[in-house]
Length: 118
Ligand SMILES: [Zn+2]
Image (cartoon, rainbow, N blue to C red; front, top):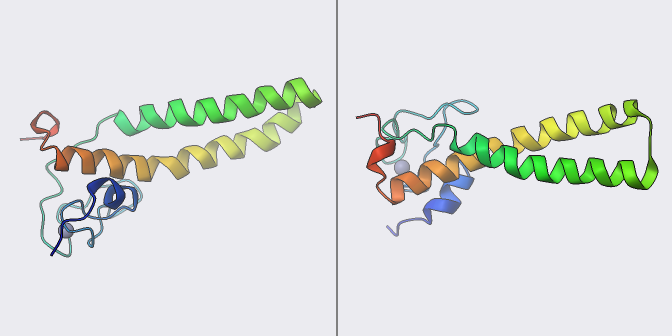
């Protein structure tokens, strides 16, 4: 069995060891073990890392779009709220799980002992 690319496996929410089992058992809760290979997934903790990347990426993307919309069209405030509140929420929630998976996979593949609970 060839080992999967841990970054791609993490982005897909799959086990960084085998690339098959689920990495998450809920939306963001990490499964204690891989259902496919039994790899111990509970030993890593991504902490606030994924949230920082989500804030930076979504903040840049949404703030740029808001600024562009304001400068180009000058819509009333309610238009900004109706468009950019759901967009920002969707971008943040959409990025959080793949980025958490990628960070956890990077920790496993680099054997990051500082990030472990033990
Ligand atoms: Zn696995």
